[in-house]
Each structure stands twice: as structure tokens, then as C-alpha cells.
Length: 481
Image (cartoon, rainbow, N blue to C red; front, side, top):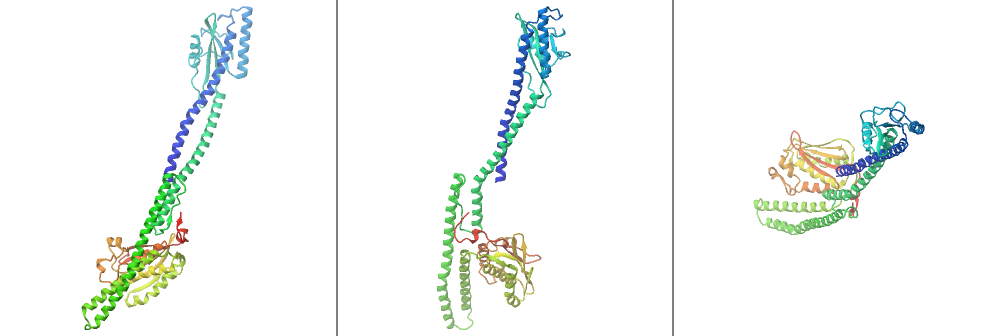
């Protein structure tokens, strides 16, 4: 969820920063150009004031006083150009006439372009409009024109044509500062997004962990509802209440099964004893009494299995580092006599030593139940193979038999309580052995899986973790995740 939420927040924050950054960059560029334009307006106004008192006409006829003022104007324009590198000139209304003064001396007003437009606007008696915006990647020039007014008439126009290199550099420098600020703000925003998503999603991750723990049998896992948004804290408290209720119901169910199994054993034992006493008064080989005996023993076996299942689901696992290969070899040796009696081959194949974390007693009981089933359903002359191997972060014990196997529908139901295939009703059993096995394995973090064995038979895989137990498994009390 974090990988989906973070990009969304980052994209939104980047969009906000860009939406603020572009107008700000445009404002910086406009401010720099406006500063240059205002400065040029002041310069053109000063030159217009000097040119206002020059009496020389386009033909060059001037008096002594006019000639002195014209020399002053030319000197000012030349010094201005030498100092700032800005071309400036005072042009008569007749564009084709020689200019009143210009610097450099070879500069002439073009007939087209921004300079011509500014000149025409000044001829109308008003200062030229602000020139178009010059961006850092453009090599344009700034043209500003002001009219020279004498006795209410425009007699000439002052035009300045400025290079924009420094202005564009200042604009670019401002943009770099804005970019650095945007990057810093983006880094802060990303950091804030990480903290925000962590704050929001941490209760979700904790809740997911606790849910997984409960789903795998660690019913004492709970969620500490101390951080995160109020809605998630309420959800955590509701989850804890639900888990408490579920644990209480399951505990009541286990206690009922255990108590019922225990309480039924005494009257059943008394009933079996009365059946035996009754059998003494009947002739030997009586079929009905033999059938009653068999059903009574089967009922006693079911009660024993129910009690074992209740205890298996209630007891905590004593996990320890175990040599799984040695344990499997030992259980195979223990079942060899049964296999020889059934005329079924039984052997262990695999490494001599491989370790994993398991409850040795529970794992031995689970392996006994699986091997017992394999020997029951494997015909004479067939073979049962027990093997162990490392499989990633787990250790797997595989029991493969050569029996009739199970169909896909039967594989989906194998391990359910009291379930037995309709093809195996004539074989003794209560249908609780594999359920007890699954409960014993789940208590220690193990699993059991069923699959077809090629070319025939059933393959049962028992998996236990290779890594050490977590605090949730080891802790005797409620675990606050």
C-alpha cells in the first residue's frame, strides 16, 4: 500500500510546487526586465531633456549656442555607450535624415523590428510600450524610445538599444535559486510524505501482522492501539475485542470437546464392561455381540482422538532446534515392524543431518500419523518413502506412498475432521488423525500439504521453519504487536 500511496502524494506535491514555481519564475524574469526598462526610461528622459534645447535641424544649420548643446549631447551619448555598451541615439522625425546624435557613430535606426515600432510610438508623443519579455534562452535586445518635445511638438526621438546578457544571467540566477528552493521543498515534502504514510500505514501493518498470527494459530496476538489516525486506533481496538471474543469462543469449544470426551469415557467403559459380562452368558461366536464389541471399541477410539485433538489445539509448542533428518530416521525405524507385517517397503532417503525449529514431540506424533496412514493405504509389495530436504526457509519432510491416492475433490477435503474417502470406509480409523496432525504442526508454525504422487499414490509434505521462533511463538502471554 505504501508503494501506491507514496507516488500519489509525491506527484501531488510536485504538481503544487510546479504550479507555484512557474509563476514565480515568470515573476522573477518580469521583475528583472522591468528594472532594466525603468532604468532605460530614466536614461532616455535625460537624453531627451538635453536634446530639447538643441536647435540644429536635420540639415545641420546651428548657432553657436546650439552647437555647444549638441556637442554636449554627443559627448553624453558616447560616454554612455563606452560605459554601459548600450547603443543610443537621437533621431529626427524624418527617419532617412542623419541623426542628431548617436553612439556609436555608425549606428542607424532599422526600418523594421522592435526599434522601428518603439520609434513610431514615440513619434505619436508617448513613451514606447514595454518591450516583449526576454527569456534567458533568447538573445534579444531591449529597445526603449522617448519623444523629444519642443513647444508642444515632437521634434525628435531618443532611442536606446540595450544588450540583455546581464539581465538574462540575473534571471537565470534567480531561477536557479528558485529551483534549489523547489528541490529543497520537494525533499522536505518527500520526507514528510514518508513520515505521513508511515504514521498512517503503521497501524495497518501491525494489524495485518496480528491478523496473520491469529490465522496461523497464535490466538494471543493483539494490536497496540497507541498510534496512527483515530479511525485506525478505533479499528485496532475493535480488532482486539473481536480477537478476544473469538479466542473465548474457541477456548469454550475446546473445553467442551475435552470435557465431553472425558465424561463419555466412563459410561462407555461401563457399557463395554456390561457387554463383556453379557457375552459370558451367550454362546461363543455370537455375531451380534461381536458387532457390538467392535462398535464400542470404535466409539472409544473416536473419543480418544477427540480428546487428543482438543489437547493438540490447546497446548503450546515447545520449539527447539531439532535434527529433522535424525527424527525422521528414528520414526521410520519405529514403523519398520509394522511395514514388514503389512509387507510394505519403508525407507528413509535424504541427508543424514538437517536442522529446523520444531517441537520434537509434536513433530514425531504428526509424522507417526502420516506414516501410519501411508502404511494403511499402501498395498502389499508397494513402497513408502520418507525423505527430508531444505526448501528455502523451511525444512520439508515428504512421505510418498504407492497407494490408490486421492482425487482432486478428495485432496481439497483431506485433513477435515471426521472426513474419510468413501473408497476407504472399510479401513479402520476415525478420520481425526490428520486433523490432529495439522493442529500439532500449526502450534509450532509448521504446515502440512497433500498432492498426488507420480505415478500413483499420495505425497504428504510436512514443513517446519529453519529460522528461530519469533516472540509471538515463544511468549507465554498475550503478544502486543
